[in-house]
Length: 116
Length: 405
Image 1 (cartoon, rainbow over the protein chains, first blue to last red):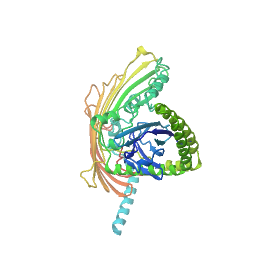
Image 2 (cartoon, chains in turn purple, cyan; image 1 turned 90 degrees about the horizontal axis):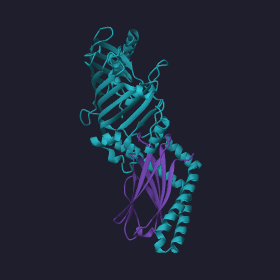
Image 3 (cartoon, rainbow over the protein chains, first blue to last red; image 1 turned 120 degrees about the vertical axis):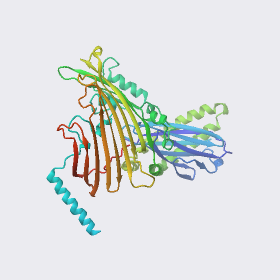
Image 4 (cartoon, chains in turn cyan, blue; image 1 turned 45 degrees about the vertical axis):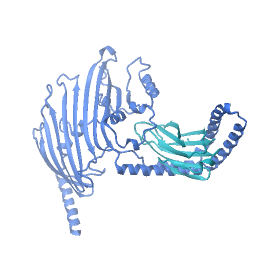
């Protein structure tokens, strides 16, 4: 059986004249780490805000995010990840959640944002 | 140095022989020859409902959301039509709903109110408390919470931060393994999006975007499901599972309150229900507390109070026991003072009994401790209340003083 996961694609309308950044928030008192990729830029992040270089060039590009969450909270099996995208003064939040079976410790979030 | 080591080894051997000859006696502070409780036994070892039923359920239902909770209650009571049998439930109301904004960094310190809400659990259970001739079903409910739950230390926070980097590293490995699928998906979606938007009037754009999101998500989900079954992903998953659990251990002052009540029902008849037991506990401890910053010496205080009422008993209306321990550990040496007092309640024949024992321990060899204790233990079965013991303790399981979360 594959790893418990959430897959989703979100299409986000941006103002490409404004700076673009994103931040990943892992909730329910759990741990998580993210890998991102957009165009030729890729890297990893945890809680920091990641600026997307050349925001003007990302129209019709896809920001691919993979977040691994470790359930280290004995009180719940529910994992939660919220992706925050900031475009100029506007912040958009995209929450996702997944309840793990008792015998699973890791949840995988494969979330893609397409910018138009 | 060599002569010191030789002396230590020789001394340890002598102690071992002495201990074998004397058949080392357990310390009064760690055992009880009567129904007089030990300090550890005063703490609520499990949820109050299970303690009051004297039950150790093999399986405890821990629902994740309100629907799970309702399903658990309905199935155990056969649709609320009968008393539940061999039922055990423990639920934390705070964690029944999603907490997407509660990050571990925002939970490093807690106010008393936050601690109460985040640690409060309700327990409920049923068990047979009668016998074959007089069947009786016991039903109990209880609650426990930490009013103080310490904090995440800077050392623990650094470990958790490092763990998140490890998780980010796994995400990067998965991203690399996923690369070919990602490229195919990105191209497919971009082409479709551009083509569809080019022929969509602005007025219908919102609807079209919503529909495309659903189609793209379905396609992505399908490809990702296949990807997650690949051998490469199985290898990464194996590495992830090889990691030791990274539980968040809090330290500092911990104050727990717990209480519960149990009722007995003769022959499973509701109208025969009457109070069986009541219990309340208060426990204070301080995990990893130090005398002062950068000090090697560690001070571990513990205070416990317990009230138990056995309503079925004709001779006792209840007992109130309280006790405490103050332990100081530093390198190869530790000392502790432990006391327990039983207050006078009703007709208890142990009323007014007390015990106070001081213990000193010295590690003569790794995991071999020379132990001496001295004190008073009232109401021992033999009537001898003097505690004066000397022995050797072999500790093969690790820390002398267990640090609990």
